[in-house]
Image 1 (cartoon, rainbow, N blue to C red):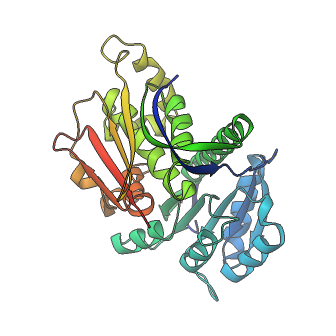
Image 2 (cartoon, rainbow, N blue to C red):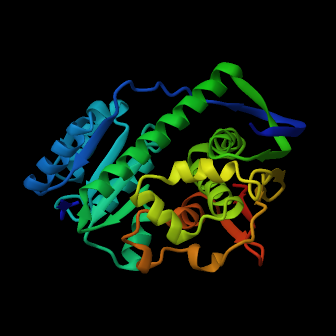
Length: 324
C-alpha cells in the first residue's frame, strides 16, 4: 500500500573555562505523533497507520493549525509528520518556526511530499527536517522512518537524563580523545560530546550521523547498496552484529578527538575502514531522494557544522563549529 500524501574510553585534558548545564528532558511513556496534512483522506490514513502502531496521534490541517497544537500541548509531542505543500502556512515555514523555538527544536520532523527536486530537498533539510520523503511512499517505508525517529529521540532523552543525574554541571573540556566500536557506544558518546558545543541540540544529529557512517560504512564495510537492501529486509542490525564478531572487523574502532580552539570547536572522527567517495554525499543528491537512507552526511554538513571536510581517502572527517 502506498500513501500518495505522504564501551568507549575517555582521555580527558581538562581546562576550567565555564560550566555546561544539561537540561532535563522528561521521557514520555507513550510516543505522540503530530500528523499535519491539508488532505482529509491522507490525514485519516496517517492517523490510522500510526494508531495501529500504538502511537498517540494529534492532527492538524496546516502549519498554522499545527503551531496552535504545539502551543497547547507541544511538550507532549515526540515526532512531527507533515506535508510540505499546505495552505496558510506550508511545511517549510512551519519547520523553521518549530526549530527556532527552544522548547521544540529537538523534536524530529518527517516531511512527506511530492516536491522532490534537489533544491526542494535542500530547503527541507536546511529547515530542520529529520527525514525528507518523496511521494508516492510505501506505508512500510513511512512506518520504519517514524520508528527510527522514535528510537532516536528516546535514546537521546535517556542519555541526556543520565548525564543530568550524574553531573548537574561539568567543567568545560578543552580537549578530549575517545574511541568506540559499536553504534550503541557511538550514540552515547554523541550525546556526551554534543554538550561541549555552543548548541548541543543542533550539533547532536551531525555527530551521531558521522559516527553511524564510521561504524557501518567504514569499519564494517557495509556498502550503500547493501544498507538499502538490509533496511528493506529489516535485517540491518542483525548484519551489523554479525560483522562485529568477524575476525576482519572485530578489532576495528572509531577514534574521536575534540578540541576547543580560539576559532571554535573541532571534532575529528577516524575509522579503520578503506574510505569512500565522500564528495557525492556532502549535499543531497536527487537520485537518492526516494531511498530510505543516505542523507546523514548532508544533514551533518548543512545543519550541524559550519564546516565539514574529509581527508582524501574518506576515513577521517573533521567538523567545525565556529566561535560566535
